[in-house]
Image (cartoon, rainbow, N blue to C red):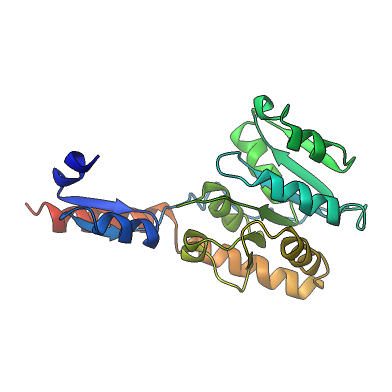
Length: 227
């Protein structure tokens, strides 16, 4: 609402695209400050799990499940060892696209997890798969980074705010062929290259630790409303 925006002295935006949008609509100070992540809780496992590679998608808001279905149709028949973990609410699973996804025997469904179980999904995954329709900040991406996961995600402006191409492959939104190809490349990485991506993801997350983000927010508050 315009009247609400004009009453504010300062606005924190969690993506540069959102900051630019808001700056055109208010005289308030607008500052891009990244969303943070608890890097103490979300962390790499002490020992990487053995077994077949597991891909992970968490959440349902603005996820591109049509693209995901096409990706899995391309990928899983060719790579039958690969497992796909989906953390999606039960109420969404009756949709036709979900039934299409569920046809693959490698797909495993999860919901209503404890915090520890959620972290366990990240720690046991080989990579995060994140086809998106849109986003500003994305908790799943940050949690995966903190756990040291390579990422394949839709190429949206906000994803670029939080990731780089050292550990994240960004593909055109809705392009299932490009996303499947990117996933195959990640799955084919040798142990050294994979570990380099994991370390890069973790290091990027450490720069977004909540303690560091809190300092930025506090400094902005002091600028907007000095004592």
